[in-house]
Length: 204
Image 1 (cartoon, rainbow, N blue to C red):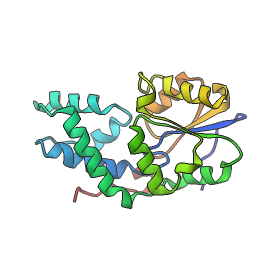
Image 2: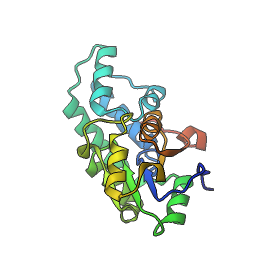
Image 3: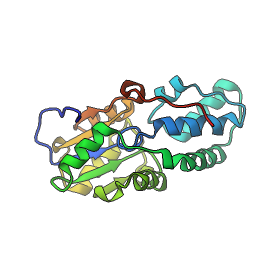
Image 4: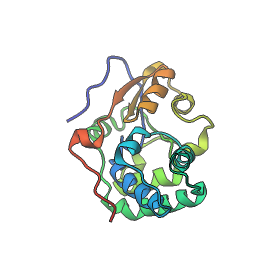
C-alpha cells in the first residue's frame, strides 16, 4: 500500500531516513533507553517520539535538566550509536514508503534529508539494501540549522537542481513537516510505528 501523494507535479522525492524510509525508531528507542539508563536516566517512549527530529545534544541537555543529571553528550551519543548498530540486523523498511521508492526509482531523483550523522544514515540504508537508490544524501554534517529550519531541504533541492515547489517530502516527525512547509515543499506524513501496529520492545 502506498501513501497518497498531495496534488502537484513532482520532479524529486526527498525522504527523511529514521522513521520514514527505515522503520528504525523502535530500535533507536531501545538504544537511547539503554544508553541513558546506564546513567540513571529514564526516557519514556512517549517523550522519545515527542522529541523526534531534535538533535542529540538538545535531547541530552533537556534530560539532564529535567532529571538533575550531568550526562556527557559525546559519550552518551557514542554509546547510543553503538547500541543501535548492534540492532541493525533487525531493521526493516517502512512498507508504505518502500512502495513509493520501488515505484518511482529511476524515473525521478531521490534524496535522503536527515538529521542523523552520515555514517549512521548510510549504515541503516545499507542494512536495508537501499543505499544505491538515492542520488544524494544531506545529513547533519552538511548544514548548520536543524529542522524545523528549511535549510536541509533547500540544500537538497539545490543540489538536485529541482525547484522547491517541485519537491515532495516524506516525513514522520512534526519538525520535519514544519521544515518542508517552510521550504515551500509539499509533504507526505509517514505514520508512526504504533499507527502501523509496530511497537518498541523493551531493551534487551
